[in-house]
Image (cartoon, rainbow, N blue to C red; front, side, top):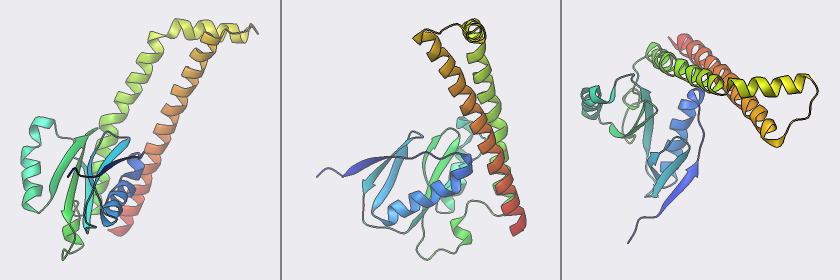
Length: 194
């Protein structure tokens, strides 16, 4: 008999990592065990409802250097599931475990450090990709903007170029604002818990 599986769309930013953990935990409680994700679609398999917790961590370690890290967490009862975009996914049975045993981080400072590592590692890359995309098409963007400023009508391809530029810029601004807000919120929340 083949296991029943389902794929669910889910979008979580760095600001939502705790919400993502809680969602995966709730899915297991409803009888859907997390199998994998590609960052947007989550695959679950049918299971008996189970009390487990899911945790995410951004260690900042290169793939080849994560073996000791995974082994240490395995010694503490964590099952490694996968890595995506630098985040590692872990699962652990919650039955009979203390609240402290269900956390990857020992204190708020560790959580703040994890988010900061992610932002320092990923945000410059996002900006570089944006700048590269702009530079590759700079001449086309300038031509379209000149036509627009001179009141000339744009062809459909030129409108698409303009919309693409607007979309890329909006996404960059959105991701920057979300990341800064997430870092500030997490920093404030976990400094207040200390």
